[in-house]
Length: 284
Length: 183
Figure 1: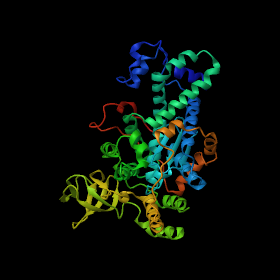
Figure 2: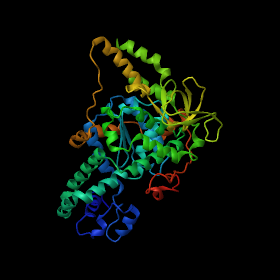
Figure 3: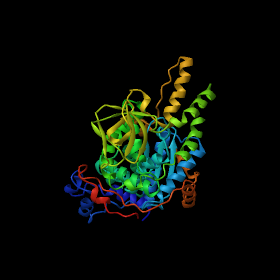
Figure 4: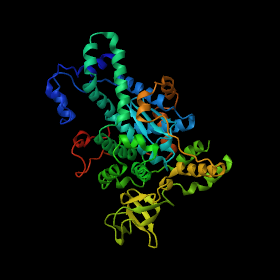
């Protein structure tokens, strides 16, 4: 199926012709919903090329808000680390892209299809490579589980159905539908995911870091750094608006990691390499 | 002046990291001899005790309470930064702030961190930058780059199963990935 066709499917699943019971997403898990809809259209029908197209567009919007840091060494470092982490996952063949954003804001982002970003504001608050790996693995997990793509589909069901209904016939409208999906994607970045998606990405992120050979407590350590910051700090505004509190995330991670991740504690923290690369950048 | 600030920064480098940071206990906790739940208890540390952090090991931190002896606490039982300012911040950022405030003292100008570009409104109103997305393609990528990076960092890949949420936590989302293997 061509990417553009799938976009039609993505939006067309929300046509108002659907039975009313299928509309209430709040009480349904995805598996149940998928089986409910199986005779209509599977919720997971966005194919990979379409997913990447949407992610590329959302990434372009994000980069319009915050440019890339102009430091090829730092960008190369983050990309190599990102690719090493991605090799430990079930989607190692995606065309992964990583970037450091030139913003003092403390945050990290993922968009569908394998785009992952981290702000320099967050990188400069880290102590070692295991912390950076933990945050990037959290973002990679959002891509693995298609959290943003699913959120876009949900918002399509809520807001875009009317548009899709009138547009689905003409082939020239594919670009229009893609734009709709992309702008929904940007809105998801601004609004945030479900809390459960964040907790899940935390749990997967520490495992991916451990698979890659790192001390899995890098991510909890970053959360502790965030927890110590003044929550009124402007640089935290978007992160705190879109995520559960660092304290809650720490508490849940601690519960899930105790007894399961202990044996990986002595793994690499990569402080030396991190300090070298990030230190050189910071000195500029 | 800038060079001096950078020199200062280099001199401060060994301070970055948990070592040298102070924290406060969030609750009354047992100070352990080793970083294990079943290790011997040295003493009980009351809530809101200031502790010097020596190092972290996994989910545990080695601390020295004011006037007491060293021991281990769960990392979740402490909170860094007992001062309202940026004291609890760590890594290069806090060092840079030191450098910045040093400069601001001389000029009399208060340096504040200007955060622009990433508010929800900024995200919604941003014009797409397609050139920047293309720029991403120029960065190193691929399996062999990753492998070289791993070898240089003495990193070895291994199988580790995804972990489940603990029962006290969430009502949903567990079944969806529990028991999923590496690939």
